[in-house]
Amino acid sequence: MAKCDYCGSTIIFGGKRDANGRFCNQKCQARGGLLALSRQIPEAAVREQVWKFHQGPCPKCSRSGPVDVHVTHKVWSALYLTSWSSTPQTSCRSCGMKSQLGGAFFSLVLGWWGFPWGLLVTPIQIGRNLLAIARPPEPSKPSAQLEKIVRMTMASQTVRQQSVPQRSTPALAIKS
Image (cartoon, rainbow, N blue to C red; front, side, top):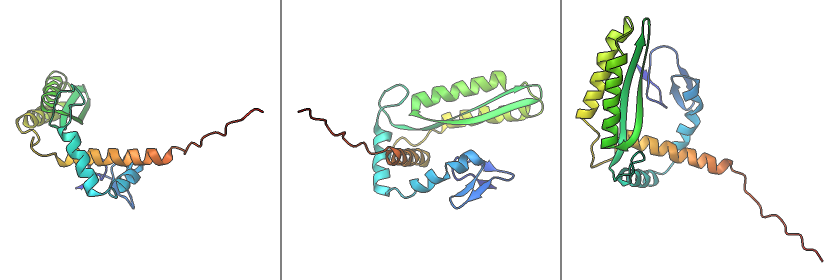
């Protein structure tokens, strides 16, 4: 099965394809240009930023790192409607674990109430959270997910800097 080059989702049917890769939807395809730009950033610059972020303070609690990507999985259901998601967050291990425990509890309470998907997806999402808690990212080195997030952030900042018009200093009027 194909994966979206931007978000990593599995593409079962359709998807969008262009010069920048294959994407799950138009939203990800629109971000494909940013993905192409991110691949042009020098490896040394990316590595330096990744290590700074990895060893820096947690964006959630401000305690010391290491900081990495922790994914929380949730599901909720109501009769014939079931919705599930996997949400990555950059944080320290403690904040990531709290979020994953919260996702498991949320799914345990609200996931079972849909037929048939709620009954099938709920144990999967709870298991994914418990597995993520049991096997966190390696604390001694940043994960590939963290590198991708930092790389995309750097590309986004580059685009923002290029789109800001250069301000010229207005001429001073001197009265005589």
